[in-house]
Image (cartoon, rainbow, N blue to C red; front, side):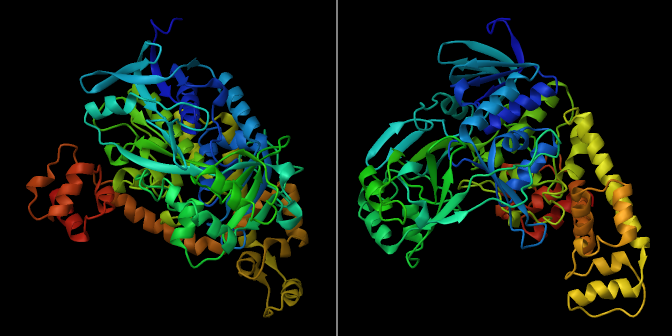
Amino acid sequence: MSLFSTTYDVIVVGGGHAGSEAAAASANMGAHTLLITMSLQNIAQMSCNPAMGGIAKGQIVREIDALGGYSGIVTDKTAIQFKMLNKSKGPAMWSPRAQSDRMRFSEEWRKVLEQTDNLDFYQDSVNGLLFEENKIVGVKTVLGLEIKSKTVIITAGTFLNGLIHVGEKTFGGGRAGEGASTGITEDLVKMGFESGRMKTGTPPRVDARSLDFSKMIEQPGDEQPEKFSYLPSTKPLTKQRSCYLTYTSPEVHELLREGFDRSPMFNGRIQSTGPRYCPSIEDKIDRFATKDRHQMFIEPEGWDTVEIYVNGFSTSLPEDIQDKAIRSVAGFENVKFLRYGYAIEYDYFPPTQLTHSLETKLVENLFFAGQINGTTGYEEAASQGLMAGINAALKIQNKEPFILKRNEAYIGVLIDDLITKGTEEPYRMFTSRAEYRTLLRQDNADLRLTPRSYELGLASEERMNRVIEKKEKTELLIYFLNNLSVKKEELNGILEKKNLALVNQSMKLFKVAARPQLNFSDFIHLDELAQFITQHNIDAEIIEQVEIYLKYSGYIEKEKNNADKLNRLENVTIPKTFDYSKVKSLSFEAREKLNKIKPTSISQASRISGVSPSDVSVLLVYMGR
């Protein structure tokens, strides 16, 4: 079938993390999809650090997996280390993170995509978009092809008019060794879109053979590593590679300061905004001048490579300054560089120009996902790609969009934040951004999201059956604990070991096990409980669910009630044609913001910066409430 004569259902522009998930999702939902990328060898390339997950990001990867995406599966198959972060805190904060083999990660993603039905590939660069009035109908490529499509998803990453900076040197590029993408921004601006510039950076890569790891602190993975995917097709790691920790010093900082006058960040050549929560080393020294050292995490890039990622030393300083300064770091005295750090500037489009489905408001059938929306991070990009792919497929099927609420998923929080509040700096997800984080845990993403995805035809029968079994066994064990009475002698034997107050009568195990000082493992030896677990084949995943419910059921119910109140406001819809400028009792700022963002519900309107509670009350009156 010729590219010239085919009209695709979905064209995905860009083969990064967002593009890969978008292409897989739309194709799996039956849409004839074309993935156009500059390099088929670099599909789902880990452009920055070789890791997936982390605080809140790990929850997003679990959610992608629960929805039938592939980021979790690919990570499990290519991981070299796994850690559950924040394990000392409550379960709402537990966040899985894995170090990945960079080369194998990209290879595995390509295998996944090539085995996906309804998905075609084409290596070229898109330099223009085809419109008919306010609808997109296809794309133009550098080779001059015009390829038609019913919908288009742009996932261009850092490539839109990308500029790479190293010291005084500046050259075009989307990342090291690859050219920038031109033409797309210009076509969108002509259609009335507002664009902006953002900046991100990456640290040097160095040769492991030139480092002295004896001067660093070893950072091994978990003794009992878990995994991301809920499917049994991936297994936890049985061997792992360690990372290492070292620190900068006042001497290192002074050497870095010598190059500040040659730094594009300080001499005015970079004027765009960089990521607040992942700053360059020169930014950290400038902003935190009183700190005499900063952490550097030394991360291997794979099983069989000497390449090392120097996490914490992101920089765009001149090469000679990078070289001189890093040699004063413990363990780096004889370092050999494989490549120097650099900063990159690129175009983005303020995400307030999108609907919750990630379709643009100005142009029908055009979707944006990933860094084009002002986000940073593989996980944030992948989740947007998944949602854009789902919604593009639904659009051509004339079905309602698939939208996740803030109480349903971190993905829902991410998208709602972007389109309701916008962002003027690269957006990164944190647990603190989610007001219902006790509900949005990494352990229950399958229970929350797989039934929704199964209805779409995206999650498999196997996934759905596992969720049903998990839910049933969890409820069965909770019911058993509520009804199992344990003699005071048995209970006191356990309580004595923990130096806790003894009981003077038999009690239901559920009530005792809910005490914060006790763990489920303290009771596992009780005969009736042990027999029940064996008889019903209760595994560690079910026990974890039950233990969380034991300890946090009060908080969970409170958050559910709060979420229900919010959802009542979600159900108070606002017509698309509603003219806020005619409502004189609204504040001037509220009218301005509401007319720009055009919220779809009272709840969304209430989250817009500048819309006060009194403005919300006025809107409720106008909506007949």
